[in-house]
Image (cartoon, rainbow, N blue to C red; front, side):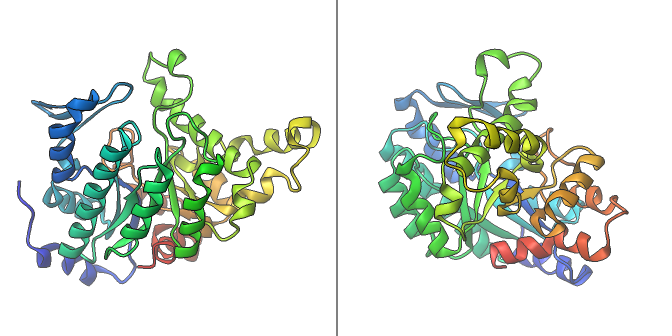
Length: 344
């Protein structure tokens, strides 16, 4: 299916209501990115398979399957309209680009970022981009961040919960964080190549448990490793309702009080709860309620994981169903906070 005329979708939604619903967790594989991956990836042990149901993408350690809804912007716009979503913040997901050599990783990142700004240019009211960077080569990542920041419609950076096994507090990444803070660009995290691979091969546990635990490790690394103290204005978003991080905060606090490894900490981890924003992919109304009460409605943003089977089919409805929220709290979650974060 080809892309659709801009006016058909960009203006019909704006007539329906003034409140904008912004999905901050919406994955996209641009066709140009896939072509580059398929053409040059084989030299680095990667391949793209076309199947009856869509695509399967493979690197040495990561496999991901997806259908045409993740590629075609016309199908995406139709899906957004069905879900009553006004804006997607487009993000690349597994395998991202860290598996590649630095040069090819940079080329893949540039291809994604250029495609995202082109999508924004075609549908400026519907799409913004979260930039992909070749973090396996931080010097190249910094240069691409500076380039991407000048592209229309780019509103933040996308970052895995680790970079080829290197945790996010590693000093080699700090110049990238400094530039993101200077640009007022939020950092959106997403799990990839998750923790405990050898024990989560069955029952889809690599996703069911691996994703939230990997997010918890990333959040703890940013706190205990001093990143959030060094960059006090840096905004970081945690996916999947924060993973394990908010739900183990009491244990993290207790360990900080009693363990010698954490003597350097001047504040408890719970003091950093509101340094993060969190999406609504909790898959449970009580979890979403508890998260909102723990961190505040102004620190929770709409997310769907579009459009994987582990995502939300009705992300807006999942928030509307939380009838204990005030109208003001609901509006913050559905779009107002994301509008501020993404400077829409």
